Image 1 (cartoon, rainbow, N blue to C red):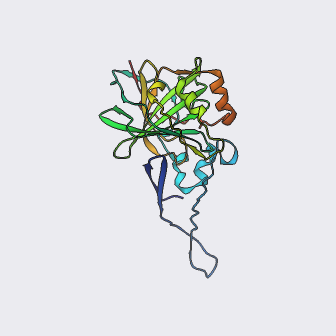
Image 2: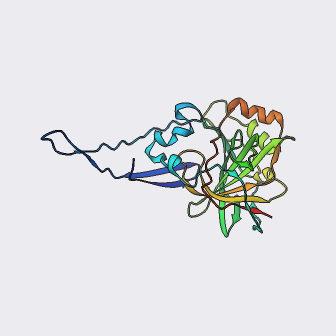
Length: 268
């Protein structure tokens, strides 16, 4: 798989991946034989999970397009430590009640959100595409993990990605999460499209301080160049809401990746 160049194009709700590989090298043949070309093994598996042979340690070996999962230097999640405290600009949120759909895609519960919801940061405007859940939280803050996390995936006009992470701890019921649970399809991979609306703004914590760093998708193909925005204040969800998700996915979190000396900034 050496010589493979991976390009990732984000589409609405779908990750499109293109790969080009150059074979090379030769092996010495036996007496009187010519050099035989090396065999380049292209892997095209698409089944991955969070445990066992198809778990995170082997993602890069399942599909040739997923090599970044094992070789990348800007992978997520990370343990967020030693952030540089600076006067970070406030994230501008332009969320509104929107149509939505819900699917249990075999890896998590994912909610597709209708168009017109944006966040603006660092002079770029990103549109909310979908949000989904992990248990436990994938990211840690100074070594501390949380019971769950919501990842809100955004994309700008150039296809660049920004993921807003909202950590969840036990406490009061969370209305948006309850709306999602109420509309879960009865079967995996079926899409439920309720006739009601959902307001992403209701998921945001009252304090808008955050950490930010450059990372990757936390699932295959582990594409890098993703702007991460991790809210410092966790939101609450009820024990019953947490328990419902744990029945579906007791563990769907990628292990912590090395930070590789990345710059992490945090709000003062």
